[in-house]
Amino acid sequence: MEKNFIIEYGQAVEEAGCETETIRFKELESVPAVCVLHKGDYTNLGEAYQFAFGWALEHGYEVSAPPREQYIHGVWDRENPEEWLTEVQIPVRKL
Image (tube, rainbow, N blue to C red):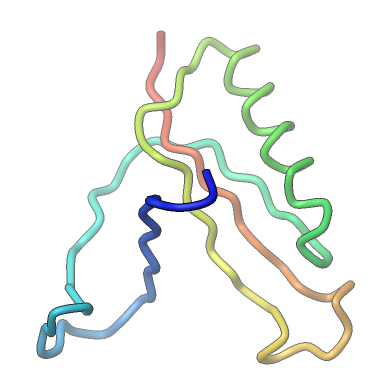
């Protein structure tokens, strides 16, 4: 979609702060998930998703909630894109 889509940005915090019109705090529940570490820039991130979805299907799982990405290392702390590290998290449930 080119417009009218929703994105949630999450960041770990030690405690909730003051909410505003655009900033809300919520705690994510613990859920079973297929997780894949992707090393490198984001051009091939789709391959990590493809692997994770394939693994889930092969092992009898279905997606139970929208996938998440956790950016562990990136442009903010690594100059070399080959050192960037992203964790793809796909919440699942057993079929």
